Length: 378
Figure (cartoon, one colour):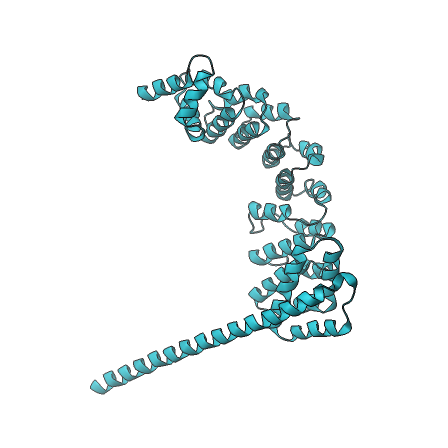
């Protein structure tokens, strides 16, 4: 029995020592790799800076090309070279950008990452997709499009992002035609990708806002609002009475983001919608449009049964010129939920001193008196 205990202690000590030696080895190895990486990064950066500086004069020779190709023999140097190219591509515009993208293809870096797409290592595959998006070479588009045939949400997101970054309208439309609400990506993620598209956004929005897929249509109506281009207003207007409530909400929200009030009457009529989500959106958008015509509708919405509708309408009405005068009607009424909402919005936007100054310039009753009286009664 004592011998077993001794053997157990010895084995335990050996394991601990082995683990300690392994950790030391890994730490030294990491330091070596880091040192090698920094050295390679400096050498590649210095060389590429010199070569890129000649790109506009078409002075890059075969020796330069072969030297850059040699860095693709190692995964470490290939990745450093890729990141350096992506940095340049993100920084350049016009002819300089086109020539840099062309050079990346010429040295084989695009093919290098296309070949990486066939790996079974999903993380390496995603890195390759991301790199191809950063290199913005249209040669990669067919290969990236194939990467959408997966259930892996990260791979789908990275593939869509890469196609968006490359900026080809046809492939971007085709990519989103492969997506529906069953895809495990949030609407917010898809809108972010749509917002970042590097090609002709107008063409893409005109096509995808009219998608037969309501989910995709909604995404691009919302993104069109973020684009804030008034050329799309009439197209967005087509959805303001759409049978699909999400598309209707997206259209109203888009008008608010663009800040154009030419369709304000059509927006106001939705203040009586059966959908509280639509009413809440209308309440927020009427504040964004900054039109006095909205005051009466907001006074109705502040009495809504839904908390979010009341809060949005309260925030909106006090942001409008003459809005503070209008809310005196609410403060003089007997709807406690509406009054609470108005007072909460006022307290979040104005200091008490600002309200006192406001009262000095306006007729009775004073806002400060109405608020104080209500609070004291509670």
